Length: 365
Length: 98
Image 1 (cartoon, one colour):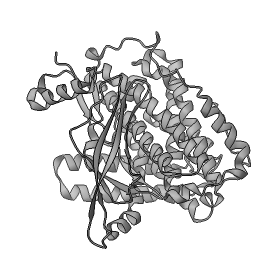
Image 2 (cartoon, each protein chain N blue to C red; image 1 turned 90 degrees about the horizontal axis):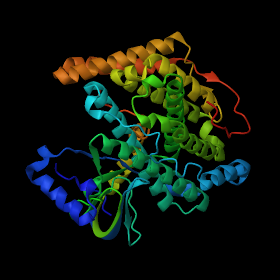
Image 3 (tube, one colour; image 1 turned 120 degrees about the vertical axis):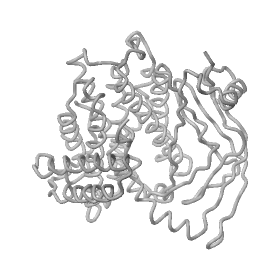
Image 4 (cartoon, each protein chain N blue to C red; image 1 turned 180 degrees about the horizontal axis):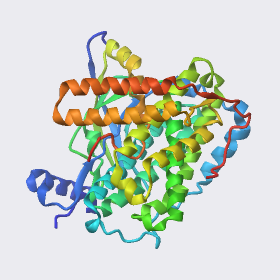
């Protein structure tokens, strides 16, 4: 078997192996090489520097202290709980979907790491840079852990993207807060829901990585707490016109999750999870958590919400089919249908509630 | 910086790639303190840098920063937000079928 560059012991050896691969022997190699493609962003770093946490000190300090104490250090290591995985006999569709899950998760952790590190490096506000440094640490650790699971499956991630041209796009800080806050909290809800489900139904645990989800999602939870406090530091971010942005992000994040989960039937069947039940569980938990800082939650029990989700998922499926078959007109009509379904979801009145004076929460699910 | 034209800068940089179990990361630091702005493009010169599993590789390289024109910078600032949903990654790629 050919050696993969990831197995080399020096950089020179790795480069040499890579060159051999590039010269046309790649077909024989057992490792499938996957280039990680994180995106690169800039933001308004002056605005980040201007964040003042002095009036939320009583919540900020304990959070930073806990992150500094690094409760999950040493957790992301394989031990006796890491069972042998029979990759060769895994049902092919499940294997495909599961590897997609691992690669996407790895890319997400990796992109988070790149973004947080950039914010750390460009900022000059000590408190903010410290927070981003701590979060970058966690993300890199998670990415390393998933990477190791991928190696077992014969997939090697390639970090060679740095020598490719990359363009920096721009996001306003508040959009980064809404988007990352929600992805961290929904990530927590997703992981803990699967973890609890597999605790009760261990026969469905087809890979040992799920055993690590409990502590893993506590990192996601803590990151979410940090973004909640960043938003609390500037009350404008959760008032007025911004409430509409919050509604937009909630709707977009929930709908995206619903669509993507429904595209991975084998994965959910293997876990013994019904994607509709799962979505509802995750939305319920996320809504409850986001009440800590958002003044609204989506009305996920509303029949129009449920219908809208089904419509947007169907439209997306039709769009993918039309694209695969090269049918231009069907692509157009299904895109329009997806757009209408999204507007329909946005039009469902949201639920208003008072935001508690104390923001910090503990992971309780 | 030109209104319509792009300028190119060559800056020395330090690339760090960690391919360790404890940490998978890759960062570029410009040694002269140069910063990138919206719409700029960055290319690290030289062959692909591969860190073998279990190691951290640091290399001194040159990077080319292709500066966006004023127009491009404004355009990226104005439109970049539309891509913000990329930050919401949850577990699966966007491929409809596998």
